Structures are given as C-alpha cells and as structure tokens.
Amino acid sequence: MPISSRNILIFINQDDVDGHSADIRFALHKALHKIDHAVFQDLPKKPENTFDAVIDEILISKAVLLDGIAISQKIPPDLLVQYGICYPLNKRCFFLIVDNNSCMVRLEANSRVIEGIVHFEYYLDLEVELKIKITKWLEDSSKTYKDESTKKPVHAFEVFGVDQHKNPDLFEEINNFPAGTDWKPRFHSDLGSFSALQELSRSIGARSFNIFCLEEENEENIFIGIGIAIGMGRPFLIIKRKDVKLPLSLIGYNGILEYDSFTQLRYNLKQYTQDFLSDKVLEWKGSTYYSILARLEMQINQYDANELERAENIINTVNSALGTTLARSYVRADR
Figure 1 (cartoon, rainbow, N blue to C red):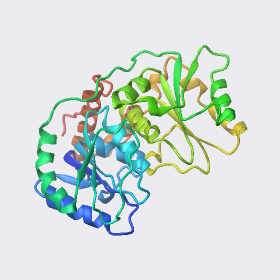
Figure 2 (cartoon, one colour):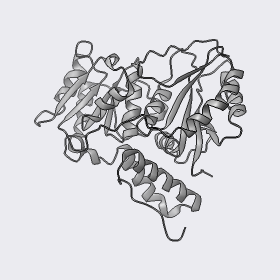
Figure 3 (cartoon, rainbow, N blue to C red):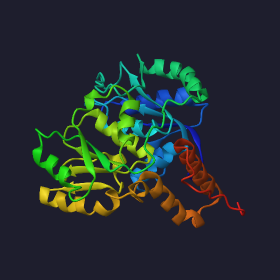
C-alpha cells in the first residue's frame, strides 16, 4: 500500500556488478533504521508510469539521497534528473559517495552546478556519520531555491544542447520552429558557463518553455536542467534521435520528440505549435503538475483513506513549493 509521506527517499544506482548496491543498502539501512525511509527501486510502482512514480515519491518525501557510485565513473543521467527535480521543490538532496567502494571506481562529477556531494571514506563511515548528518538535514527548514521564474508568457524559449557549428541542421529546424510568429529561440550551447543551480534555474524560468536536445553524450547540466524544469512545473520538450537512450526517469513524459530524419522532426515540432507558441503555454496540460492533477482527479473516486491523504500531501507540496494555489484541495467530508 502506498504511504502518504516519508522522511527519506533513496535512489540506488542499479548499474552494479561488484556488490556495491548490496553494500550501500546495508550501510544505509544501519544508518537510517530509526528513520522512516524507502528505496525507490523497492516500492510498488503506482502509478506504473516511471516519470509519474518518480515525481510522486519525491513530492511526499522530506529529503532524497542519491547513490553517486557508477561503473562508468560518471553520475548516471537518472540521478542527475532526480537531483534537478528536488532543487525547485526545496527538498534536501545529496549524492552519497563512498570513496573506497566495492566497484573500486572514483566518481568524476564535472558539473559545477552539483552542490550536494557528500563523501565517505568507507561504507562503515557512511553508516556512522550519516546518522548525525541526516538529523541536521531533516531539521533544516531553510530554503535554497529562490523562485525567479516568469509568471506571464514571454514570447521566447530557451534551447539547451545545440551547437550551431556542430549540428547546423538541428539548429536550423529548431530556429525555424516559430517561423511566422513573433516567438524567438535563445540557444545555449555552452552549459559550462553556469556556475550554480540558481543561475541554471533562472535561465530555465526566464522563458515560457524550454527545449532540451539529447545526444549520445550529454553535459551533466542538461539532465539537471531537465530535472529543474520538471520540479518547477515548467513546460519543456525533449528532442532526440530514436537511437539515443532516454533516462528511465523520463519515460512517460508527454513532451518527448523522437526522430529519424529532420523531415520527421519538423513534422513532430508542428504538433506542438498550438500548445507551445501560445500565451497559454504555461497551462500546458502535459507539464508536471497539470498532468499530476489531471491524473489525481481521474482516480480520486477510487482512492481509500490512505491514498486520499497521499494525494493531499502531493497537492500541498506543489502549492507550497510553487507559492501558488494551482492545485485545489481534494479533502472530502467523508474521509
């Protein structure tokens, strides 16, 4: 049965062949055995859609811990997306790194945007030290995210991950997307210029919507930016070739455009013209919180008391984080 709230949500990296997952699970269990916590991978997936499940579980959790060890020596895209989601929601979120780990790898985090990396020398150190750290994190009510996003439609959109010189055809297709309108694209090809989460968030929130282009190899900030857009509830599109792998956390999102040819991409973009090149783009039904509310409203009559409380907690978190009354209350007299 899904719970209505929890203290700690944990995402464990599953790309493991040397026993790290079992070792870090054991250390986390010992450190958190007196604190309400859950590992995402162990939870019953309701909803079954991975994208919705990730959002729901983060929304009802006070803090999120991410397993930062990876065989590839780079933080997996899914964890970067999850890290980004937490930021605009003011959820405490940390990458836990065990330096002397079972995989015998050292993490290479290249992004200057990542501010929440905590190192432990051994698994035993994590077990002992995390007990102290987690109490402080849960008691800390300060907010690190400052909402500077525009609340009115601006006839411009931000594009991440496209270099005009490296991929001129993709650049041209996106540049022509608003042809015939007064909407303008703004391209960011050098994400390394961002030095902090707030700067990246400010850029994402300054425009009415964003476009993220995924390649085989992507800057860490691309995935963090996607997560921030999700957490902000900002409309965005993801553009990728069909052979480019999509992070599991994004499976089920409504704004993913896959293409085999630029002719196909041009056609796919046209399907979003009416919704995105519009003064009502901020109310797009596919954006994070509008889609959550639509799902809750469709299912509300089937919920038991516990599921109703869970839905209420999700809605309250959305309203609190966004400083708005976007979501109406689902409290019912018969609860």
